[in-house]
Image (tube, rainbow, N blue to C red; front, side, top):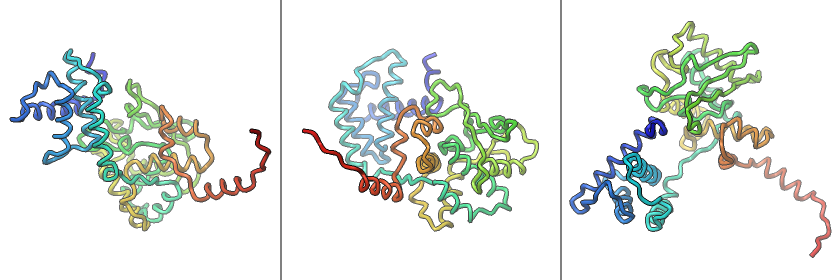
Length: 316
């Protein structure tokens, strides 16, 4: 029952964390008890993780610390919260500050405007290109995380299958996500994909892809290069970067999160209210605002409004 509270991927990460922790505890100069961590030993562990031959990133080390605590808690071993360990908290904060600039990843949005630039370099006579195009359009219009569209490895089990795609009587698609980052209870969520008749219409893109599939096994992957194995996230990102390069855009400035971010950015530019963007993107908090950037046109419009604002007498 306790184990089922965590997603399989999280459990795997936490087990790796505890393995790393026991490796540290067994070092000749350490000889710490892995089942009785102290604040001092955890601080030394963080320092070791940052300076070893294959150092962990700050983010991974942070997850590993929570993983160590989770594994011990599952064994009935309790110890103070990390927030009650000021030395450890300060050490992790210092690590983050020291590496923050280097660890920043470019996440420019792939907006619909950029997608149209990429479209000029898609070979629609090629079925794999049509499949990649369908994945890109679906990702932006559905505000998908790239990991929700494609697994990290073809050996992964959590990926979209043909049975997850449903079409209603009005020609709209509904994609069922069996699990997602914010779906902690793993009840699943439906993402609605609606057509708009434009060149980047996701319905048109999906229809073009599905014509190549014919009568397919419902368990077959929805996005696939060969119809058998799922399209992987590295394959999707590689194809995306090829199109960005052909469109004379720097692929290094984009990442897997650019699709989701681009969907949010385009919705904002279209004047969609923030509360609707939050629902469409399945965000449980207002963190999506961090993805949105003000365009030059919006900044210019705001400047004009400020210049035309009517003044009123101020009262002390």
